[in-house]
Length: 283
Image 1 (cartoon, one colour):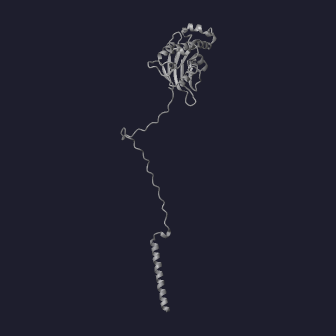
Image 2 (tube, helix red, strand yellow):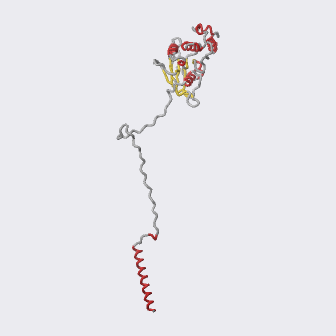
Image 3 (cartoon, helix red, strand yellow):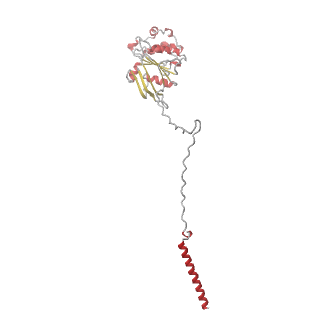
């Protein structure tokens, strides 16, 4: 069984592969949908052990060793990675792919016998670009399964060659359900077919989102649709004004000071009267 938990690959700016979780057993076909080609190819490379993930756990039959996953899997028709060149002939493609299989399994390195045994003689004289989408997938998956050690088949974007799911879906279903050689098959596609009811996953299905802030419920007296009142800041106390003390000469006279002033005025008046009497006597 292929088990993937929180598989994620860093990119230059954003994640090349957002966190994704999935699992598929032998005898099953799993479709994984993803919008961007870069994300689909990154997932296909990681699932087949061709790219090391930045985070997460990838295991095949309870082993997490990348080398064992790579040896047990086959990557099929990945754009920009191992898709056949359009100017390549079918004979040359078969010869190249058979040369990658361990010698003890491949037999004679001749394309003609292999094409005949696997019923692809009708394609022998064609270029890759001339092959219909359905036959193209049949040829590429047969070459991938020429290695008997392959138990996991990862197909990258088979729907890019045709908008009709019947050009690729029946072939992958037949490979997964083959009783003689049950395979775990994963197809990374742009969108799930409308009539698909089997196992499926979506790229980025394990991305964690931060919780949204809770909104304060409206008071009971506010009706639905009515705008909330704008909260007003509490009134600030006015600062106390410091009052400077008045000058001493401006102070109000007290009863004691009033009495002292009257006594002084009377004494002065009596002295002036006596002085006037002395002047009169001298004359």
